[in-house]
Image (cartoon, rainbow, N blue to C red; front, side, top):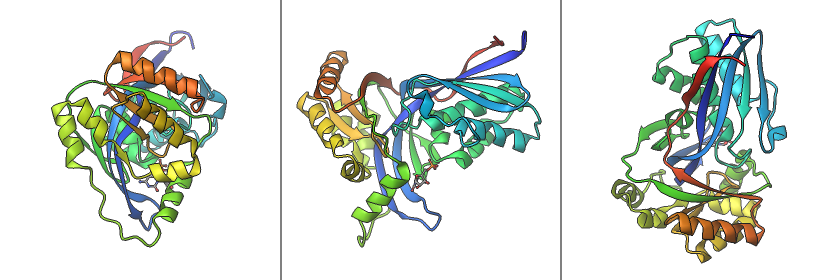
Length: 307
Ligand code: C5P
């Protein structure tokens, strides 16, 4: 390719500070009210001109990421090409920093990054709102990976309102090698709640107040996830890791999204080390990372000649 342009876009993982799940909808999705929070685990997607739309992946468990037309980044590039009447191809290269199949929306981050990268590469010039509409077609979590920060999600998670949030928060995330399938976790919550009348999902005023005041102790006490009992029912080890975090003084702990990642909010760097060491020693997590949030959504980090 020689002097061809290449665009690299970085997109963040998310944790759900609160996830409230309503009953199943006729379209198979569940009505949600959630608070997304972007954290400093990121994937980089580099887009280089090519004849066809292809993808390569590097990083931990890269072999678990599909390389065919089901890859969310490939689907994002195809969708953008189709809607903008573009005939060009693109070679996408993903550097994974976000755990694969961890409930942290890594695939969604790749899709958001691919949209932004191809928009720049192909000079399609879509507005952020036009990109958001395409993102929502690709998956419930993709619009948030574009937006980043801290935001309230409604509908199936794709309708976003930025949250009034103050402060920078320190997190420890405990990963598990044992993947949990998102549809299976939603099916399990339906099973566990069968026959119950469910209220309309809403995020709590307590959590929004904690975010407005930037109070980590209040935020830690407000973390909540309706999917947690379902994820723990399918993967009881999650209960052990939640207990370890609590024992070592985390301000709060919650299964992120449909799991199996567990996110612990901690006071400071020192406590993040204590909790990280305890989780590692407990043997219930395959990997433990210390991160912070909020961080920005998908953005160009490099725009220059291709390699
Ligand atoms: O939108 P996305 O492809 O990320 O969703 C994956 C699966 O998660 C859906 O097929 C559905 O089973 C479940 N889901 C749901 N309700 C939501 C979001 C996801 O039931 N609001």
